[in-house]
Length: 271
Length: 264
Image 1 (cartoon, chains in turn green, blue):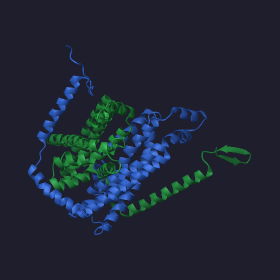
Image 2: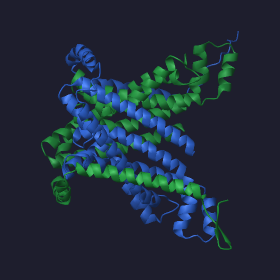
Image 3: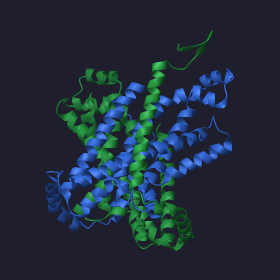
Image 4: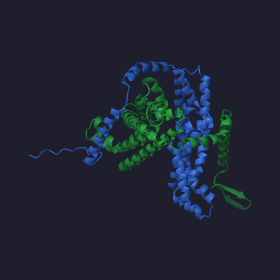
């Protein structure tokens, strides 16, 4: 126990002196990095604009209320599109993610040396590129529209779903797999009867979880032209129609809340 | 003669009505979804050779021509990531404490929970649009957007972690006569610290990824460089930027994995 001698008295201390110094040093370095970064950012900031920010905010707030409720009529179709982008994108991602996950999991991969690194690379690269960037690329290839959004969401979700799924596969109970193998089942039968039933709940949970995230992400894909309610948002912003913008934000908020409620219900039913 | 009994795999959903209902519902939904999806197939088929050209023009990634732009954008992204994570985490500590059921009185709890819920609602990019409008173009707007998103994420997880802590330790420290801050420092903080450090690193990782998109709406960072590259049809430079992003994210993920393993 670290103790400090104070005259006659021994006083309890939380840490050894060396460790205490190490923590101080870490804080110092962290603070120095922070200050350095802050300085660099502030050099690139036009402080004149920041100073006018309260006025701008007040101005914006005045111009955004009341929301233009009549605009809602034109929003139903984009909302439906947004939900479709999220759902179809999630389905597409799951279809691709399942084989990738089986190739990435240590206990089911056909080959540790060749297949597993490829699967891990697919997971890492699809995960690290944001759906908006995927959409940006896909819009240049297949043109603006819902399809680009679906594929963008799909690509982005592959890595996420496959990563969670392969971690689930690695955690299965090997005894059940062994029991099925002992009956003389083929590799596919082992997969179907020994592994799939064990990961089914995890799979359903991941699907719903990702769907919920995808609803959020698909609301903004329209900013780069990939369909959904974001298209309306971007055109309203371009037209400086702030009352429409505020209505769209409310619509997005409502969609997100409903999707969160649905996914919470479904997850509750599964687990 | 009695028919031989055979075993059938039990279905995932036991209630047959629910099972078939879900299948039929899913089918009806899919028909509707595909039916209403407006796809310009002509444009898509046209896109196939275009995709080929597009992918070809990605290779080889051109790091050299725009290197100074890429480096600038990248550094800006890194600064933005660092300060938005630090500021976001710093703000979310009091909010997270307030949003923990077992720590805060009800009015504070409700106030902090609503702050967390509010900052979680909108994606970073929408926040960035507004901050760009209010604070002007540049990394400052991106930094604010990422900080607020961090508050929503980190505050929520911190509050949940505090709610899950072991109350016995907290009670033991309180029984020694510790004041509120001492109690916080010696009973709550040591319990939540390891996980929270891991989550801060995870958020750093997310913020870097997000910093690549706030630039699309004018929030500075590598996203701005990427958007410019796309606008100029310099796909080889864009490919270089994407490669850099992927590599940095992978390195960050690897490093944070090591740190998390050492802490926990």
